[in-house]
Length: 269
Picture: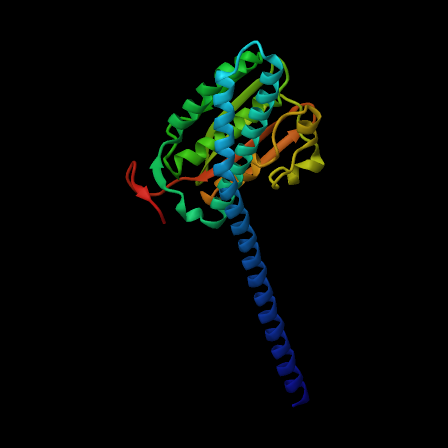
């Protein structure tokens, strides 16, 4: 009888602790959402006046007398910095929107190949400027996927842009698309500076910038890859990195193959 009572007390204690843990977890989740909402509201309030400043600086630059070089340099610097800040605010808005409302992404059943080819072709001139070659390999009969085309384009643009930016002279950027099991895998590989092993796990953290980015004084604040990860997660996929310092990096993301549905069908569930 004594053991039975002790067992009952233990069960009650376990249940109490479980309920408290759930309560704390729910509260932390709500606080996180509140913080994200605050960031979104703040960024939204900043965006409009910032865009107005940027536009006005652009007008001043266009009408500035060419002989006044000192003024031009100062205004160009302000214009550039304002543009960077505006990009940051827009990135913050996109990041918070995806975190709070991933269901707002309009999905379609579509082929990845035309999107990938279009993005790759748009970066060929930039690669050529830096004496880099771009190689694209797409497996035949790649199945359709359920995607938001605009955000998937952004993922591709970010990864290819980074592969060019952090590459070595006369290097190569390789993009490969294959079907593996129930997923489509897209990899972007470069022959660049690579990433330190201790930095791999932090790459997708908000505002994290690796030593390669800081060392080469590349512009940016470290939001690009965090947005990329959230976009892929919102699509039910995954993203990971393989890298060796001095040898290059390979970023791979997966998207689940869509089962059923017609081409171009609008899916919002």
